[in-house]
Length: 138
Image (cartoon, rainbow, N blue to C red):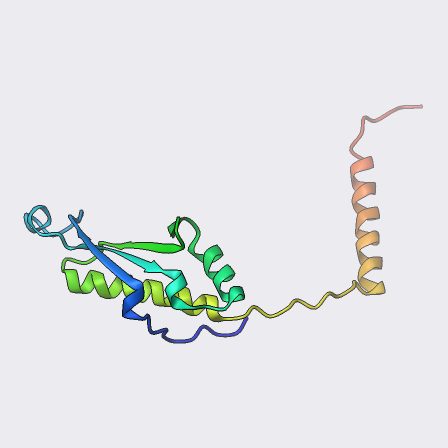
């Protein structure tokens, strides 16, 4: 697979931010200040080609919400600015990954020698397993 582009610049008109009360470290600050950010990106506003749109939809998974939007919540940092940057970086990485066209797999056939090795191995295992039966005295 080819490499993922370093950065994708998200258009500001496609973004919608909401700040929530965060959880985790921060002491009393967590209870007072809404530091977690919920970033909603309108995918239609990104004007992506259909193939990139489909790949983005698959990559987004459960973050894809109705109405063609991707919803990302960042709450790992103690400040709004850091969480905002983290959420934007995650969305940009997701879009950049969707922009990479996967390489087509070239079908190959097993060689005659590999088929022969496989069949020889199967015959050997068959002999081992056949020898595990009850011993009969004739």
